[in-house]
Length: 213
Image (cartoon, rainbow, N blue to C red; front, side):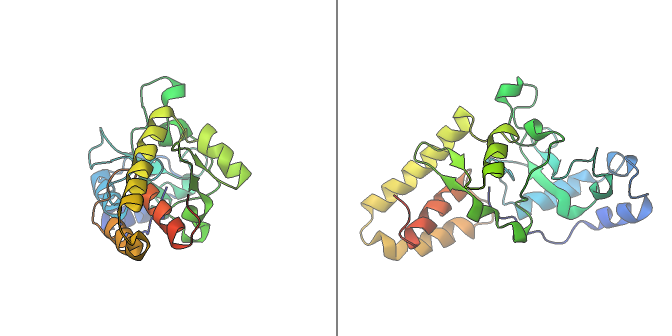
């Protein structure tokens, strides 16, 4: 996960929220301009999933609008833009042990929201050499696995590949430490992120403080 900076919501969402009762489940279900929300989320998240950091595109068959607090139990937040995130399909239609992200999460709660700056999501995560993601917060660490399924084998493999690539750059580049910030800027300022690139950014930031292997 990476920190998501929320911008202005689509005007149609503002209008929709003003026109329905706050707890009416049809408020979101019948909202006809979800495409505009997907498009805005895509830009904010630089085309990567809010949880696993895989690729997302503005297509209802390839991207979900995730409610960080689920609609069933938090109807007052169903049209709250701060509660909306862009997520991948997360193995939708596969067996439960192959699912991840919003599909696996369903109506469960998470302790931390990547779109809430006060939650400082990136400071709560670390990546191991085999691509495993974990947290020093015990509750959240359990949720990474049991609620989000972020340590499925193929997700770990994708993150490991990114770590291996940035480690290779680090070891093969003369005076690499002096070039770390430039690398971070290159990876974070692009309009569209590479899949799983925040893993490389995490590694590089660790190098800045001398904490990465």
